[in-house]
Length: 192
Ligand SMILES: [Ca+2]
Ligand SMILES: [Ca+2]
Ligand SMILES: [Ca+2]
Image (cartoon, rainbow, N blue to C red; front, side, top):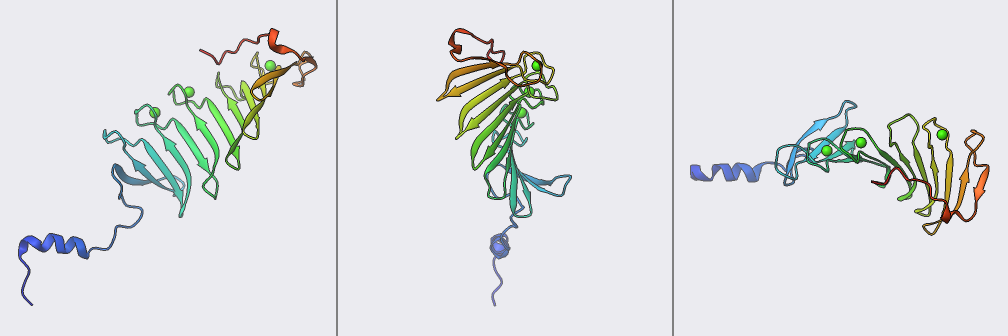
């Protein structure tokens, strides 16, 4: 057999190589994968070309369990989306102001949001709890004084506030109700 020209050898070598294993970078922008402290495989992508990852996909075995996203390009994840065994989101944590503290934790069932916790002051209990029915906001509970006991309860129908409850006894259960709450505006410190 005639020997191949030397210039073609790299090509022949490349064609003869087996396909890269799935845990090696294959996509555009994909960085070297890392191994998490629990042995999980972390695949990473750099979308803006600065060498720092913006997307992380965490795998346990063949199953992806989480997607992390860096939204402001500082190389640190700002949202973490936890996936169930079918690949549907079951929990999402978001750092909205990029101070590395989680501000919102949302839970999902069957792909629909069922609960959202807002940690406005980063206390042990959420300052605001939103409950969803069929993916729509149904109830909002607020801890106005930060003692971990909810004081104001708002009930929604098709996005409209229809009932307002207040806990005046400190047991975390509403005992005074306003059925026409439009006139009574509760200051919403989340705005602005
Ligand atoms: Ca970030
Ligand atoms: Ca934050
Ligand atoms: Ca309270």
